[in-house]
Structures are given as C-alpha cells and as structure tokens.
Length: 220
Image (cartoon, rainbow, N blue to C red; front, side):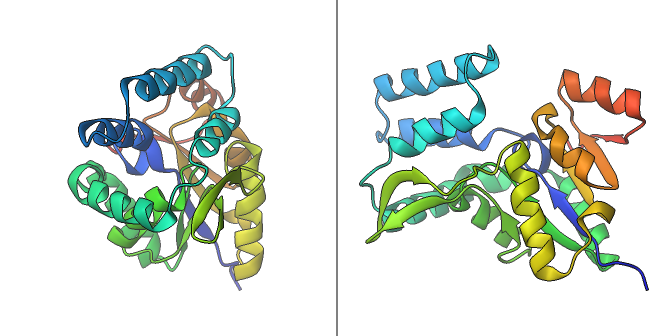
C-alpha cells in the first residue's frame, strides 16, 4: 500500500509573491504603529542578513524580543486586517493550483515557514488548509508575548525538525514527500524529501536545482 505523503509549501516568495515581513512593516508604518527608527532598525537587520553578517534565526529572535509585553489578541486583530488588505492579493494563482492538485491526489498539504502563526494562519485559512501549517511559534503568557520563541525556530534545519514531528504525528512519510521553496536556506528540507521543487528560486538554489536535476517552477 502506498505511503501517505505530504506536500509542504514555503510562504514568502513561494505561496506569496512578496515577503510577508516587508508587507507587515510597510502596513505598520502606514498605520503609524512603526516609527522611523524601528523601520531603520528592521532595515539594518535585513541588510546584515543579506550580507551574511547575521542569520535569519537571529533576526527572528531580535524581532520577537522587541514584542515582549504586547497583546496577542491585538496582534491577531491587526494581522487579520492586514491580511485582507495586503496579503490575500499576493497569494500566487499558480500556488493555489499546485495545492489543489496535491489535495486531489490525496496528499496532505501544509505550509512550512519561518513566519509566525499570526501571518501563516490567515493564509492557510484562505487556501482551505485549516490549521495545516508549521511555523515559528512565540511564547505567550497571560495573553502577552514574553519576547521568546519556541525553539528551534522553523528555519533551516529547524524546518526539518518540525516537519518530521508533523509527519510522525499524522503517519506521513516525510522521505516520500514534496517541498516547494524559493530559498537556498531551505536546503536541509529540500534534501529531506523525495520531491524537492525550486519555486522562483534565488541564484544559489537555482544553481543547486540545475546541478541536481530538481524541477524549477514559477508561481508568479
């Protein structure tokens, strides 16, 4: 009997045609909730990441630490409004099609992203995936953020860690599954599945996919 398999989809520049972090920052700035200094700091973290001076996990921890004391309920409400205004129009039509194709084949489909659940949950709901998503979680105590993440962050090898737990809990064969992503930083997860797919790939992932004979697709 064939093994039950999953199809995992990255979020930014894969299911979405943009960076959710960038969209969120611009939305918050427009609403007056993000100061110029905070925007500059976020931009500086991004520059350091692009220059390989800091890794994404460190950027996520800095960002989450900055949220200590904030209300989870307020963030959920803000994210719902933000999703409708800025994120829903950025869901790539081809991503919707590929997700529908996998579901038609009986595959379990899940989003797999370094983003938070407050970003990921509305996207999953819009795609008809319910709570089928794996992401970076933030600690909450008494309805407020502690400023700490649940480790490991769902990034790089952390994606493999959480995807493996997700698969084991649902009786899925991770090694026979699919993974769609744009980023070379997801190499560990791409190597963990039977069907790695490079979507709108960055330069390093494109070279790797071409060298290894992995499919390359464009979702937008």
